[in-house]
Image (cartoon, rainbow, N blue to C red; front, side, top):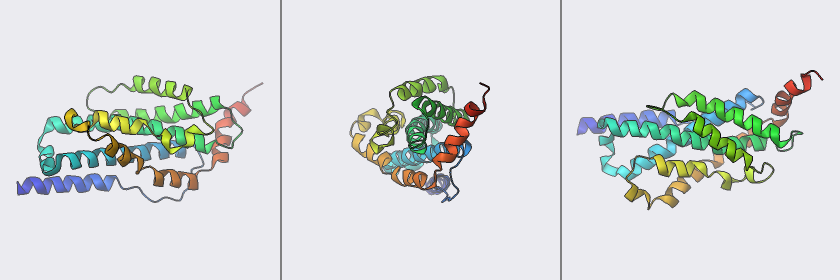
Length: 222
C-alpha cells in the first residue's frame, strides 16, 4: 500500500504540474493566439475540475484508481468530453469579448467562434480512448451559436453552463453520489473561470483580431 500511495502522489503531482497556467503577458492579437488561449484554458479547467472532483469523492480510495485500468480509461474519456464543453463556454465568451466593440456582424462572430471551436476540438479529440463524436459536438456547438446573443449574454459568467453539466455527466463517479453533488460541481467550475476571464480581458487586442478576420473579405475581388 505504501508503494501505491507513493505512486498516486507522484501521478497527482504530475497532473497538478500540467494544470498550472503560465502567467503570460503576450497580447492576444491574432486568431492563432485566440485559438491557443481558448484551447489551453479549456483544457486546464476541464482537467483541474475533473481530477479534483474525482479525488474528493474517492477519498482514501483515490490511490487505488491508478491500479484500475477501466477507471483510468473512464477518466481519460471524461477528460475529453469535459474539455469539449469547457471549450464551448470559453469560445463564446472570448469571441464575444474580443469583437464586442468591433465593426463586424454576428455572422462574423459566429464564423470565428466555430473556427476556434473546431480547431481546439480536433487537436484534442485524439486523446480520447476509443471513438469520440467530434461531429456531434460541432453540430451541438453550431446550434448553441444560433441562439447566442453576442452583445450581452455571451459576455456573462452565467453563460458558462456546458462545463458543469459535462463534469457531472462524465465524471466516473457513481450516479447515486452525483445526485448530491450538483451545486458543488457547478461552483468548482464557476470559481475556476474568473481569473481566466480577467486575464483574457487584460491581454486581448480586439481591433487586431477583427482586422485579421476581416482581411480576406476586404481583399476579395469585387
